[in-house]
Length: 372
Ligand code: ACO
Image (tube, rainbow, N blue to C red):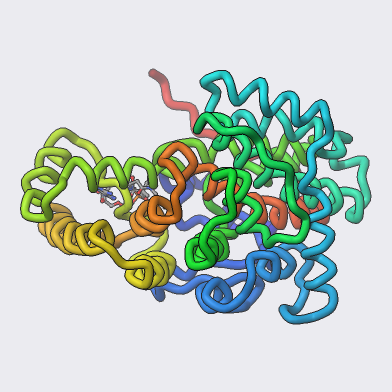
């Protein structure tokens, strides 16, 4: 952690916005420039060109892409796909409740992951626990979707990619290669994104010395919020409600007048185009179709309106807007959108958990008392 970045007694900005609270080598987001990286490497370039496993290996271990170590990482990750009988039974049981998929994953991880306090583990043991969680996540999240869609769970196949495995578990069949690659690009784009609410939560919990699965559970809780990971399914609702792009302005004006946010727009850090959105828009255009064209036309209208209504703010299209379109085209139901984001971001959380535990200081800020 950084030493006393803020002088004692000073008051942090609301939401800690812009405040530097730690040093990290995992990656960073340069909001003014519209650029972010994974351990110094252009993240969008990686997402466009590399497998998700390559990106995960870089984030978790700092492994150079296209090396034997990256290949070994992929094999190690896929060896963690299969759930034990207890964990599998719990997934099946919880899939038949109305718990959201992220809560199911948080409930199952303690059965999958070494549950000792992280403070009592070596780095290698914590890394192993992180790999167990990442390996199991697409199986759990995919299986929840499969069961809720009325299908039978499918046994994991260790020889498919992470993205293909997630889609197969979720859909009960192999996805088309173009859809698999589109979803893999999305996973690569969203694997890590600085000190967002869920990564910060994972670090706070890790800083107490609690277990790796407790840190993941906290991160899952944070990601479930509509302002963080819950946006993409609401984006699709919005596009469907608007229907004809000619209605976009009137529809969105009513939403803003009612004090609601337009989903898929705005970002806490980006002050110019969100590079993830630009990349996913290209992916969506590559898949093509009526929905893509309509989404692009609606996007233009909503950006115009937001610029008019909030002239002092820079509100850009965020990653969730075209994520909704791409995931829908890949055959995933809306209920599985946040799960897909989770199957990706769990890698970033893992990197943050390992980094925090390696150089730990309990995170304990203060609040200013104000009389009610
Ligand atoms: N619709 C309407 N108004 C907005 C939107 C939006 N989508 N985004 C920002 N604004 C408004 C803010 O309310 C604020 O208004 P104010 O000055 O009157 O209070 C102004 O624009 C400036 O906001 P920012 O400081 O730039 O953004 P902030 O950090 O407050 O919020 C957030 C960021 C939470 C993402 C917000 O843009 C939002 O709620 N967007 C919709 C939900 C969404 O798409 N979430 C996914 C984010 S991406 C991710 O987490 C992976």
